[in-house]
Structures are given as C-alpha cells and as structure tokens.
Amino acid sequence: MLLGIRAMLQGCPGLEVTDTARDGADAFEKAVRLRPDVMVFDIVMPVMSGIELARRMRAEQPDTALLALSSDSSVATLEPLLQIGIDGFLPKTADDRTIVDAIRSVAAGYEYFGTDIARLIERISLAKRASDTLFTPRELDVIRLSCKGLQYKEIADELGIKYLTVVTIKNNIFRKLGINNTVELVLYAIKKNLITL
Image 1: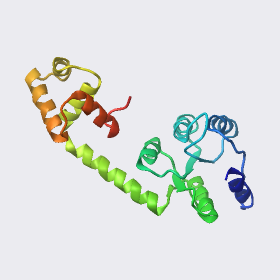
Image 2: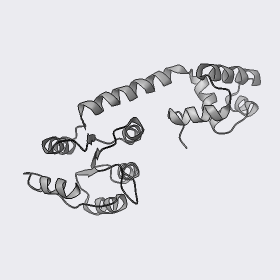
Image 3: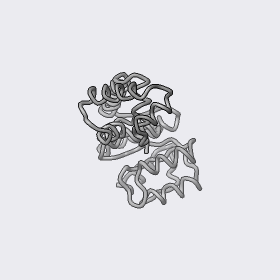
Image 4: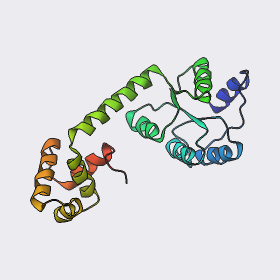
C-alpha cells in the first residue's frame, strides 16, 4: 500500500513525495530532517504507533499537517488523535482522488474528515459534552483529587470544605454513575478523559 500511494502521489502536479518510512520512529526522524508540509501516516506501525507519532509531531513539528490513513476508524482510535489535534483522517478504502484532495486541503490549512468520520466526531463531541454537564465543578474537583489517591480528609483540606461535605459529594457521584468505590470512579474518569495518567 505504501508503494501504491507513493506511485500515485508522484504523478500529481504540485505534490512532491519527500520520503517514505516503514515504521513510526523512522517516519519521525525523517520528518524532523525533511520538515514536510504534510505527513500521511497509518495508526498501526511497528516501533512507534501512529498515535505516538502524531503526539511527537504535534509537540516538535507543529507546522507539519497530519493526515491519518487507517483501516481502524473506531472511537478508541479516533478520540486520542482528535485530542492531539490531527488535521485529517481517511479510511484506507478512500480512493486516489479523495486522498489527493485531503492532502491538498490539510496542506492549505483546512481540516479534512470523510463524512463517516465527521459523524463519528460529532458523536464523540456530544458524549463529551454530556459527561461535562453530568457533574458540578465541585464534583469534578472531588473526582480529580480522588483519582490522585487523596482520602476524604485530605480532599476536604485541599478544597477547604468539611469532611462530611466531601462524603456527601462523593456519594452523589457514586449514585450518578451507579458505582460503589473509588477504583470504579478512577476507571470511569480515565475512560471519559476527566483525568490523564
């Protein structure tokens, strides 16, 4: 597939393929040296995953537009890429013209997501807004401190509130989520990106 995409792009006026790479680490090293306008990358690669590659590119090569081309368009894959701030995402089933259009768009500073991916992004956004409105700001404070391993009294001291207030808030959180302990709360918080490890 790599050879096919390269051959297809080399025949497009105004586009130049600066190099190709067979793994994420090699792609990153070449991108640092060559500073391409656009990087087209897969999610599943040896040595360094596409998600880690995108993260490092955003941190160290922010001017390069990032276009993911992958057979995996699940929420679990797409959500971290959106948080990193990729510029486009296409399924590997995209035809040549769509790939070229996407490259030109992200090179010009626009985002490019296929219709199916755009619908998925909307679902992710709606789910995130729903989780954001599920808790009060004080409940979110208690969740984050609980996930850091603080006990009831330590949370009370940190927030300047009474011990029994923390107990009440945490019980309300458990009730809203239908859970019974802090371990389940931590798992929920990680899944919903309320905290980062």
